[in-house]
Length: 214
Length: 415
Image (tube, rainbow over all chains, first blue to last red; front, side):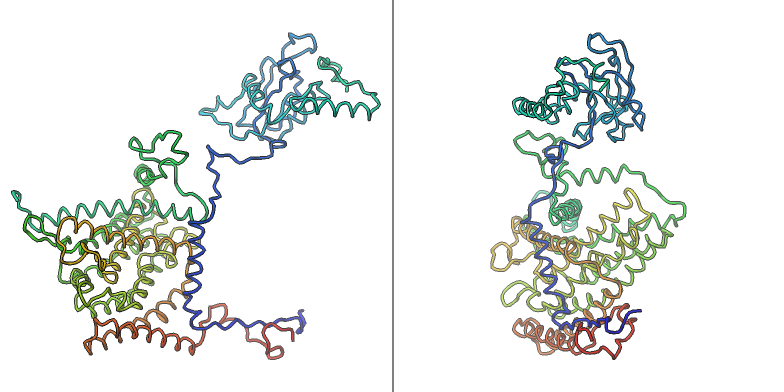
């Protein structure tokens, strides 16, 4: 129940006959319209030519397969991403690695970009940070087949995007990073001081088996 | 001249030329409608389609990112309409459903025949009237044909067998009936001032020494006619017949492909007719004062082209205002629409008509010094009457419970 003293009685304002012609108001409106038409900057981004700048750090766009410092595919074909993927869009065929430092490598690595829901679970699951999502949001193809990205294509994406999004967490992967090398070394030195050099930082050629135990 | 041309041949050529010009103008008014809509909303509007194979199709990089400002857009739109699936729903009244868009477009287009485009022209010693037809009842013909425009809407709405279409059609009819009255009365003022219903003579009565444009003689009638033109052509703020938010699409909900396009073209052609109509009646048609070449005495071919250009410039101005108003004034509610007509425009137009009759009685119907103060007087009287009249109530306001006496008094103050 609303008390009487809480009720505010409001009367509609009395407007004069001149106001009721609404000419003044319409002219004001036309002024606003014309000012927008001629003097305001256009808000449109002319898409294919112009693009909005976006936060590259955490956007979940097209995948890439990272390369290790030797330029080889960083993936160890552990099937973690394929298992984690809720959309079942990752298909890996593993083979014995031709290199000394790991057991397996992906002979085939396909991602169906049309099935992918870009949730980033593969990125979370990967123990060696080989698969990552890039800020590229415009994968285009004429057929469905074109949109199934194979290993070469995914490595190509890495080559194109390594500058705008360096491969993350180099400490675990033993990767030296792609950004400002001097600054990175400073950070590593400070980290070593803080931890009392308990943790031996993995050298570039750290073996995968060692990483698996961490 | 070796080849003798008669007025009939001349009229035929003119009709074809004008028809082409009007259709082109319709196409590009749709383009500019979209363009202006974009500009007003801080966008660019269509700017991608060039004219394929002619210009702007593949402009070099140095011309920038704009592909000839999207001037090919009308062609793309037209192609789209032609190629789309033309659906005739099973539940419609098929003959009427097919006829309605034709009526809408044809009626909008045949209004042009009586518009005087450029006075008289002398070609090879023969004088021609730059007008497709010059009937004695030119003005009445234009009025009749203009009002026929609602037939397309009503037939479309009825034949669609869809309640939203029907609502749109009925609204259009009621609106047309209401706004025909002030329109007719405003035009009557012009007829009384000029003593003519032949449009060519009405233009001549606004030119020459001692004469001025009718807008100076009857400004109030001009404004009333202008407002009713918005209503006649179903433009915002009077577009209740097709308001998307309430009626899906109004009378053309069930139409698709080229039949929808014909409604669309008809609407824009109607707008151009209306603009030409008001230019001829109030703004001197092809005439511009003090400029040689645009006077009734000039009968050269160049002068004719100039005059046609001037009339088209005036039409373009009105088209521009149509579009600006569309993005400025919100749509009326239906009771407001009726109130504007019956309580606003009709009394005002009757006042101006009375003035025009008195002026004619005293032989002052062409004297600006009499009619202009007279118009001011009409406005003053209208304002006084409005001030004394009760303020209009909306339906919601009328149904509110009365304010309780306990807290009466000051505005918005806690009792």
